[in-house]
Image 1: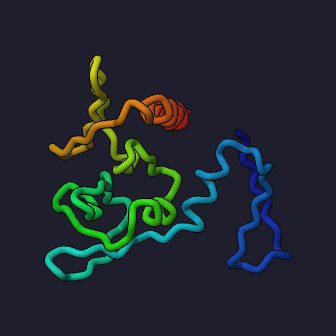
Image 2: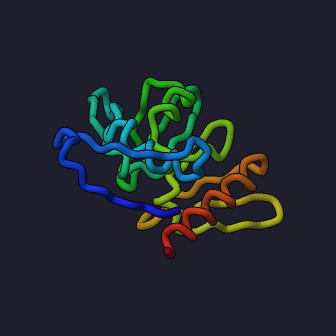
Image 3: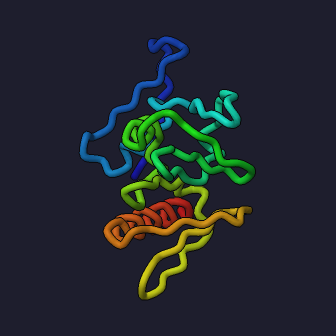
Length: 150
């Protein structure tokens, strides 16, 4: 992918215009941070917090509740998982029918014959990737790693 910046004084000062092919594989990574909110509303002990998306490790449903995990706490959300997924940037990925993971937060993937376990940076928390989602998860993780090396 090549990036070219052209300074144009005819464009209003607060505008940025991108010309991107609709089939560009990096389009979601470019567009997601622009269109998605930087925080989400979550609850802890009946108190509402506006949690920065960058602090989220993973999100899972447990007993009909949506739990949002950070390093320090587990918050609850009143949104269903599919609506939460729509609000999150492209750095989040579904890893099972009931869980989403933040790819930048993943520090290790432990694969065995029966399962795949994901560990997170500076956290004891872990979550399993369902077999059905493993291939896509592995490909997306590898793609992110290659982009970070460049």
